[in-house]
Image (tube, rainbow, N blue to C red; front, side):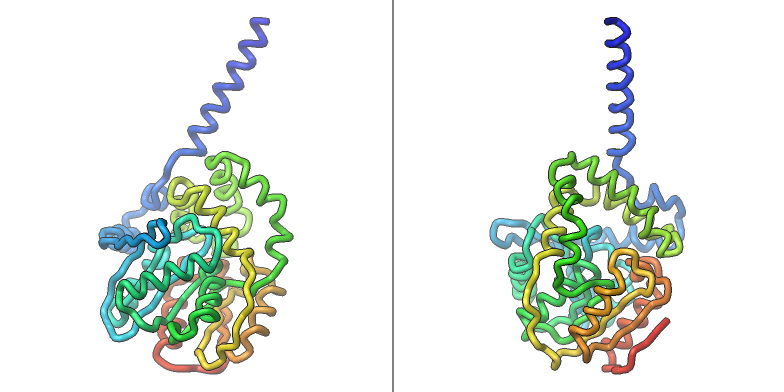
Length: 309
């Protein structure tokens, strides 16, 4: 009997040590480990004051910065926050007003969109050039369909059209993520980085540091699950050909398969298409120079031909 207690004690200690190791919060700077221009720029960027607003009793946090006649609205994906766009915001802030939001745990696009409109109204902003990636690109499609009068131009990056595929492929994971403790969910997400996301981005140390930070305290389980439900929240796309659109895709995106990418382009046949070679799922983080120039060209002029980098 004494041996049984010893075995259980060892197991309990092992589980506790494992819990401490996988639930430890890690900052971008701790993971990145280099005091270079990139890390310094993020550190300075995070000093900018944030705004908060309550919409339907839910608090939203967003950044308002920049100056100019036009406004860019940045919408992040499932694993992100307002500051994942810092390399774009720093690039454009001297020419454009900028709004970048962090999604609270809201699980449907309609409520998300209502909050965005409240933010724009609160800041007395009429039209925006919306830039979204992944979930953000899907959300940008929703805003363009439902609030076309507020959209000047739209960028749908590394994203997908309304579909049933993502929900079908993730049914088993959905149940797991809903019942598992938050630290387990984040551990699974961190493990998944090395299996597809990072190799597709040429193992970018910047992307690695940002995503590990997100998956070790930067984002909650509740936010992640709510964002997943937004990803699978289907809607009817309204015809808005008069709004200039650009689709940015990567030819090796590990999270959006080729079939969904082709369906997205078929859904918006008049959209300009930019294909980034080996850009992965987060080209705006891992290849900011290419991404920024792509956005700059689209904002400043309406180029119709498709482009590959």
